Amino acid sequence: MSNQHDGRRRCGVWLGWLVLAGALALPLTGCLVGPDYQAPAAPSAPATWAGVGAPTAAQTSIVTAQPAELTGWWQQFQDPTLTSLVEAALRANLDVQVAVARIRQARASRGVVAGGLWPSLSTSATYQYGRLPGTQSAQSLYQAGLDAVWEVDVFGGVRRNVESATANIDATVEGLRDAQVTLAAEVALAYMQLRGAQQQVTVAQENLLAQRHTADITRQKYAAGFVSGLDVANADAIAASTAAQIPSYETTAQQAIYALGVLLARPPAALLDQLTPARPLPHVPAEVPAGLPSDLLRRRPDIRGAEAQMHAATAQIGVATATLFPQFSLTGSVNWQSTLLHTWWSDLSRSFGVGPSVTWPIFQGGAVVSNIHLQEALRDQAFYTYQKTVLAAFQDVEDALIAFVNEQRHRQALQDAITASRKALDLSTLLYREGLTDFLSVLVAENALYNSQAAAVQSDTAIATDLVALYKALGGGWDDALQLGPTGPPWGPPP
Picture 1 (cartoon, one colour):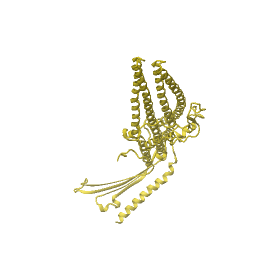
Picture 2: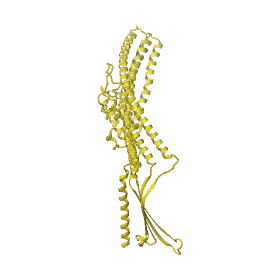
Picture 3: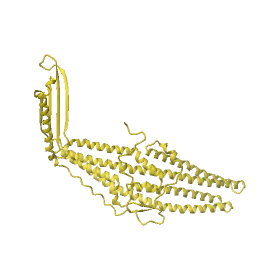
Picture 4: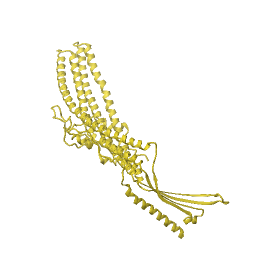
C-alpha cells in the first residue's frame, strides 16, 4: 500500500511540475507576429445629404439633417397593425433565427480556437488476456497511461486565431442586425403593397359604379332614340375595362398577405382574416430626420460587419506568419503496465517521461509563404469590400431621398390632374345629358379621372415605400434587445 501511495504522490508531483513549467512559459507568449489591426480609412463622407434641401410647396413630408432615432422607425407611420407585424416578425422570423444561430456558432468556434491556449490532458486504459511471447501460459495484462501536451504560443499564432474568431463573432452580430434591418423593411414594404392594392380596389369599384351609372343613362337615351348603339357599346366597354383590373389588384393584395405570413414564420394564409379588411395606407410623418452621412458609418450593420470581416482577415495573416517560426511544446506521459492488479502502483510497473519539444518546418515548397500571401490578398479583398459597402450605403440613402422627395412632387401633380379631370367629367356629363356634346367627351373624361385616381393611389404607395427604403438605407430597424431572446417559429427549434 505504501508503494501505491508513493506512486500516486510522485505522479501528482510530476503533473504539478508540468503545470508549473507551462505557467513559467506563459511570459514567452508576448510576441505577436503579423500586422496589428487598424480601423480602415473609409471614403470621405459628404457634409450633408444632397437630397436634404429646402422643402418645396409640393412636399407634405420633408427630410431634415436632424439626428435620427431609427430603432423603431415603423412606429412613425402611426399604424398599430404595421407595428405589431414588424415586431412579431423580429421575434419569430426564420432568417433572424438563422442569424442568431450563426452567432452561437461563431462563439463556439472561438471556444474551440481558444482551447489551444491551454494544455491538453488525455488518459487511456486497456486490459488484455493472452499469452506473451516466451511464456507457456496465458495471463492478464493491465495497462494505463496519462499524457499531457502544452503548446506554448510563443509567436502568437493561437492568439491571432482567437483574435480572428472574436472578429468573426462581431461580424455575425452585425449579420443579425442586418437581418433585422432587412426584415423590418420587407414587412413594411409588403404591408404598403397590401394597403395600396386595397386602395386600388376601392378606387376601381367607385369608378366602376359611376361608369355603370353612365352606361345605364346611355342605354336609356338609346332606347329613346337620342344616341346610337355605338355610345352604348363604348359605355359598356369602359366599365368592363375597369372591372377587369379589380381581380389583379385583389391578387396583389392577397399575395402580400401571404408574404407577410411567411415573414412572421407562419403559414401563408394565417393572416387572411386579420388583414383582408381594407384599410388606408399608413400615415407618412411630416418630418423625417435623416441625420448626417457620417452617422451612417456607425449605424449601418453591413458597414460594421464588413469592417469586422477585415479585422478577422488581418488576424489570419498573423496565424499564417506564425507557421514560419518554431513551435514549442511541453510534453509528458506516465504509463503503468502490470500483469497483476495489486502491483499496479509499484515502481516496477510505472514509466514516465517529461520534457520540451520543438517543431520547425524547414522546407515545405513555399507553401507557408504562399499562405501568408493568400491571407494578405484576402485582407485586401475585405478592405475593398468595406469601401464598396460604404459607397453603396451612401448611394442607397441618396437614391431613397431623391425618390421620396420627387414622388411627392409627382403626387401633387396627380392631385391637380384629379381636380381637373373631375371638373371635366362633371361638365361633359351635364352637356351630354342636355345633348350639347357627344358621348366621346364623357368617355374621355371618365377614363382620365379613373387613371388619375389610380395613379394617385400608386403614388401614395410609392411615397410610403420610398420612405421605408430610406429608413432601411439609414440602417434603421435593429435592436440589441432582440438579439438573444427571439421566440422562434410556433413549432420551436429542433431537438
